[in-house]
Length: 235
Image (cartoon, rainbow, N blue to C red; front, side):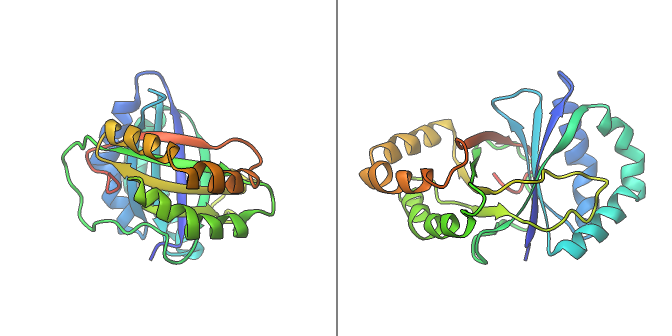
């Protein structure tokens, strides 16, 4: 079971995203998984043509350090790193996360498709005040997640900041963060828009739950709108 996850957002050089995605999907998925990681999803950010977003996970922090050392010190990355790095401006926007509860991590198929999906994946990020994590997570999982499911967006995962120290400092992560994230998938853009409309008509959401969530926020939420690549498990 994955207990530690990274949400990685890369800013790329103009026009180079498909070069990186082609390389990543063809050469870099299985070699990472062979050393103990799980590559959950790779995406084009629909709001930024030069941004590549992906999730990967590890059973625990000790495995994370071992797996990252094995991959980035191994022959596959040594062969392809110059090509990959040449597409990137910045690869340091990384959140270290864990399931909000033992039941709210990803549960995805074991096998990958090679077909480009038409689905939309959203990642909603709530930036919380310093001590809001437990109360917010409990409220969300207990009260909000069922309503989201009823309005067409069952959360595929609910995640929160993992406060563990980065044990592979060659790859930076964002520090000083207190984030709650939930992930959903929709058949297409229209299905997402219908969910937004349905949720907006819910007085349970607008009058009851949204104010309770908002009081815990340090700033406004973000939502990533993501198109899965052909080999993304999360789709």
